[in-house]
Each structure stands twice: as C-alpha cells, then as structure tokens.
Image (cartoon, rainbow, N blue to C red; front, side):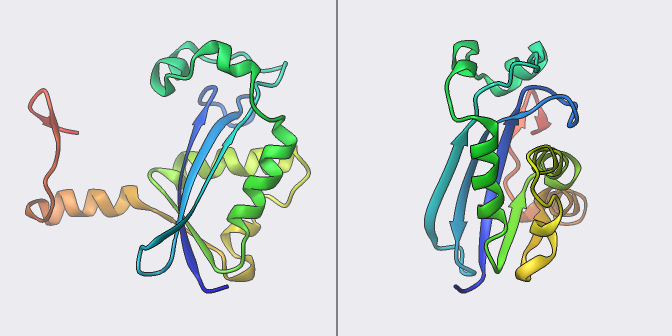
Length: 154
C-alpha cells in the first residue's frame, strides 16, 4: 500500500497516562494528496480500576452511561495499534506528541503490544500539528483565519 496520513484524536478518562485510559479514538486516513479513503473509530469500555476525572468528562462530553458500553480495552487497543502500524502510515494529531502519543504508548504497553513501533517501524512516522500552528500564529498570522472566543484567538 502507498504511504498514507492518519489524522486522529483521542478522548480519555483523565490526564494521567499511567492510570487513566483512552475512551475513544477517531481517525481519518488520506492519501498523500489529502484525499480521504477510510475512517476508523473505537469506543472503549471503562476499565473497572479507572475512575474518570470530572474535568475530563466536562471536556470530552462523554456521557457517564456510555462508559459501560463499547469494546474491551484489549481488543480496541489491538485494532488501534494495527491502524497506526500499517506500513507507510504517518499518524497526525493536534498536541499528539505531548498528550495522545503518551496515552497510546501506555495503552500499548499495558496490553502487551510494542509501544513505539508506530513511530519508526515499517516506514511509519508521527507528526504534531500544534507546533506548526504556533509557528503560523507567530510568523504568518495573516495566512489563516483564526477563530476568536471572547476577543482572543482560539
């Protein structure tokens, strides 16, 4: 298969990558010209040892009754791992290197999967749009229309 981009985002039960868990992952796979050809999502049932953070619930807006449904973590994480490790995949997120990737690595490790292969093996790479966005904000602010919330860029 040709190289692809996998744009993804995760929702979690809190901020602690070692004790919280991924609740949802949504991804869109495109070719190198950004033409979408596949979507993937995973909803993960809350593990019995995890207590969701009230702040996380306010941010991700996942209803508490939804925590009881979804796939078990082991099955969902194996599928997520396969998606990110598909040969030639560049996985792309927003603040992914500082947040999402750490959750993914801990989830992979906890479920007995290699935690780093999606970053280097089989022509796989990762990319974070947050630093690129900051560079545009600082040096080419006129290149994009920046949404505002209460008079401040959002």
